[in-house]
Image (cartoon, one colour):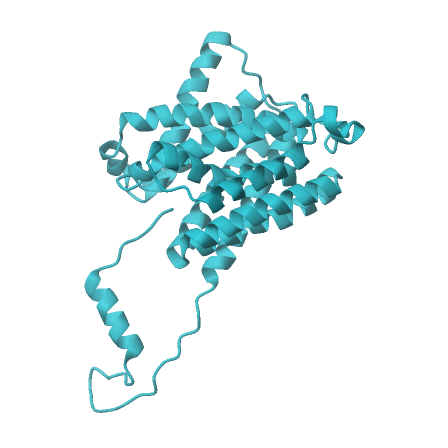
Length: 334
C-alpha cells in the first residue's frame, strides 16, 4: 500500500554492486574482496503474517462486545483511529500533505465504506470469524468483475469460472435453511441477532462494496498515500455517524471493558495497515496477497479457542473453493 520511491542512481549503484566480482575500498581500489552473497529477503512475508494476525485480533475484539451496537462501535473505533492517525501525522510533520491531497471523490467513497463497515460489524456477530473472513476474501473475485465493467479491463473466461466456483463456496458457507434444513440454522456463534445465512449475504454485499472502493481508489492512490486515505476515511466516519448521534442522541456510555476493546480494535487495525504497507515495500504484491490467506488458517483457531466454535464440513469445503479460486486468480495476474 505505502511505497517509498528510491533514487534512480541508488538503484544503478546497487545493481553494479550486486553483480560485480569485486568490492573496492575507498582508500585502495586495487584490493579485491570476496563478493558478498545476499540472502533472500523474507522479512516481508513474516510482516504480512503478523498483519493478518492483527486483523483477526481487531475482528475478535468486536465479537467480544456484542452489547455495543454496530453503529456506535464503528463511530467510536473511527474516532480513536482518527486520533492515532492525527498523532502520527503530527510527529512525522506531514499535516501539509493532508491539506494538499484532498479530493471530493474521497468523501463519496468514504461514505460507502462507512455504511459497509456498519453492516460488516452487524454480520460478524452471527458468523464465525473464519466464515466472515473467507466470504470477504471474495473481494479479489469482484475486483475483476467490477474492473471489467467500470474500467473496461479484460475479464477472461477462466476468471468467470473462478468466480462461479467462489459463489458456490459462499453458498456452502451460508447454507440457506430452506435447502440445508437444520444444518443451515445451526449456530456456531450465539451472540448474533440475525440468522447466519442472512449474515452471510450481508458479508457478500460488503465484499462487493469493498471491491468497488478498491477499484475507485486505484486512481486516487496514485496521488494520495494510503495513510492519508485512512485518515480521510475515519474522518468521514466520525462526521457522518457523529451527525447521526447529534440528531438522535442515542450514543451510550461505555464501560471499561467495552472502551478497552474499542481502543484495542483501533490500535490493531492501524497496526495491520502499517505492517501491510511495510510488507508491500519488501515483497511483490502477489506474494503479499497470497500470504494474506494465512488468516484463513489462524481464524478457525481463534474461533475454537476464544469462541468455542468449530467449522463444519460444508464451511471447510466452501472455504477451499473460495481460497483456491482467489489464489489461482492472483497467480494468473502475477
